Image 1 (spheres, rainbow, N blue to C red):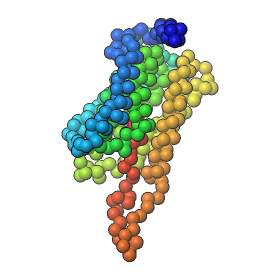
Image 2 (cartoon, rainbow, N blue to C red):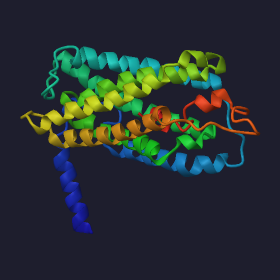
Image 3 (cartoon, helix red, strand yellow):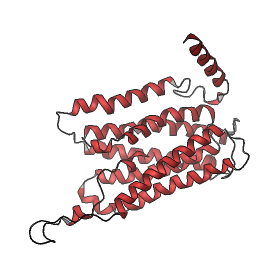
Image 4 (cartoon, rainbow, N blue to C red):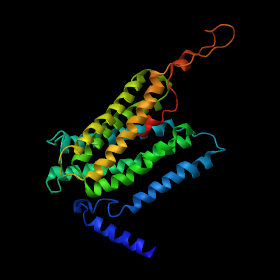
Length: 292
């Protein structure tokens, strides 16, 4: 056991020698331990502690807080998207092979900064799940939802620490735009039933999310066929993640919008007792839309 621990320590020190020195002073960047601890606490809270606390309590209602939270996330996601665009993807980045610029050039530093902001936003998004549990929307808190939110901050710690820029930021660039749109949707939804008529584009938001993961899959797959000065380990991780969520979103889309909805029948007439709204609406277990 001592030998295993010693080897682990030696490998960790070796790994840290390859870290980007530009991000050493960034908040929570000195070690992955703080990110890991927060994520483990998050999993325990939303899976055990908070559900147990809410078991015999009435669901919380905090519409105003949800409105503020969602539109604050609109602002944060919009800022991150613009920064990814102006520091790279709309400012000369190659969509084929783009190595990380480790220099102190202002544009390279700007990209490193927005990578950290994307990492930080993943901690803020943990409140999504906490709000679900407090409102007793437990059908939203699936294993996949918790897995996604619980692993993103840790995985992005390594992204910021070692590759804050370049090829691997394409998925974050896409994801920040999708989150910008998604939080607009949830912000308007939180404003009350009278605003439901403005949410007719829900179906298209799901299509955008599927398109996002498809684009990331195609973009990442390029590194399997070309030479590029970018660590393949990160390419494998991004590609695997994109494939998993592409399948999940496609499955959700088919279940929500392609499969015929059963028509409720009561009494002697086959048409009486049909609730037109309930018969046509998509399933309420909308976990995948809120997951990414």
